[in-house]
Length: 351
Image 1 (spheres, rainbow, N blue to C red):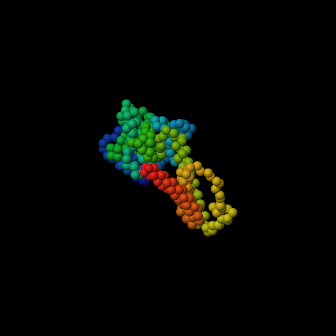
Image 2: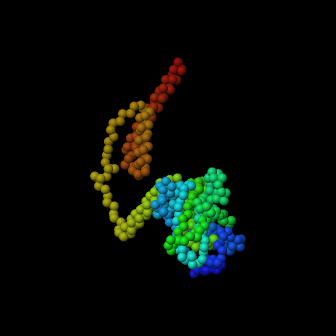
Image 3: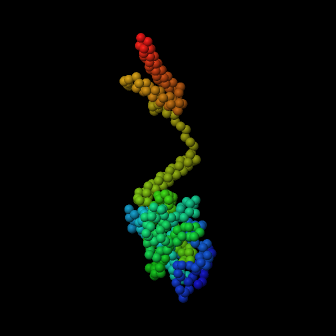
């Protein structure tokens, strides 16, 4: 087995044509040698990296189901229902890899939190969904991302505890200079699960690797697992559209202010100023002294508060004073009536 070192010091092993096909399992010595190159370690790289072989992936828009999954080009984001199949077509330049003698490659899918403050945490399923699938293969029970390939390998990094799933790329003759390989995935928890994703956005990072875990290419995509993919996608795109339009409008206003003098405010004429016009209230008969008093107190509180807020206390003083006098008058009548009634009761008791 030989090695090739590229200009960016990336090391790739080359399998001699007479050597046997590499096995997916590595010895302990190999594990220690390549641990620092693994995509699932403590430090996760999220930058897209096509690499020497132009690694990329595509989603077939003709297969999009309005009920199952949607793709937003605005966010490079997939909206998908739980336990639904997401078909992904991977592609890389086949001839270059063939020249290196790499007979077998693998594609790793690693879900991580999008926000850097949570990226050190591992993502696993919530206890509720684990209990629902307790009879399935225990190797993938805690994995939020499942691969439909029969020989998929479910890994958990012993240092970072991060879960990933590996699809072994079986050797086949490509139809062109680029090799394509289709993989089907399922997400087994929702973004709203409180003891799993907890509504935190996530990426899924796909890496093309050698069987020792050396990264040859990397691409990521945002994912939201939800019950109504189409509704959530349209809602988030509409919010983003409004945000962009708001930023553009703000920048435009700022540019106009900087490029021109601020025009002086033109005072309103009396004919246009409805606040200076005098209006008369129609006669409003009110039955009952209690309701009459409540109405006066309500008007008095409203006009007084409005005058204070608008700094028009002097202009509104006559109206407020009138209401205050009417309230005092009604309360005085009530007091006189109550005093008279008390006096009559005392006289009655004396007799």
